Length: 209
Ligand code: URA
Image (cartoon, rainbow, N blue to C red; front, side):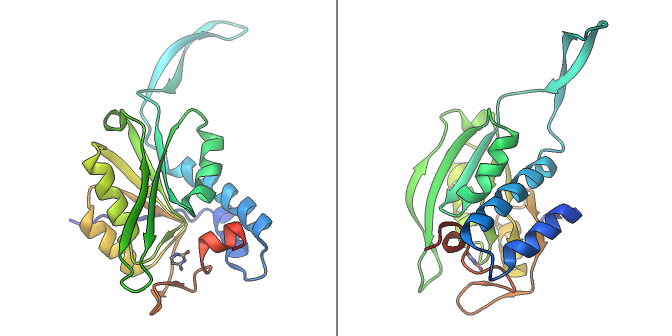
């Protein structure tokens, strides 16, 4: 059964997203906004992280204090636009391990083609968050998650900033076990596989290419 995406509709995220979308926002400002949205989104994505307790001493008394349980997280960035979202997330979870998956969309077929993959060795034992600002056709995201599952990852979530309804349907049908987080679900995909209204090409806007 397909999963229902979590739309992170916090006013701060929505406000920053509007400026991210705007045509006149230059790359430096775009990167800053994307980093801030990454920080806010990872907060929501990790809401159900398990906690344990450890003994600490406050200036007044010892106490059992909550701390995150289990092995460190893995954040997997889908190159290259994923890095723009990854940076902000890493600021909030600086001890996370980081993997990279390089996939590009063939401009004709819109299918995902792998050119790079580097993952932490023990990914099977870790919560894995896959990040890419745009879930458009979902060909790339679907292929990346399949490759991570092949590498042993079992607890996977996917976080993006903008999703197309077509991409949400395709991704959640292919990977119904992978919870999906986005800041907005836009109207549609155009004939070139761009999200409308969207924000244009995320990689180009991050790097000014
Ligand atoms: N990738 C982008 O960068 N933008 C889109 O609209 C779709 C895919």
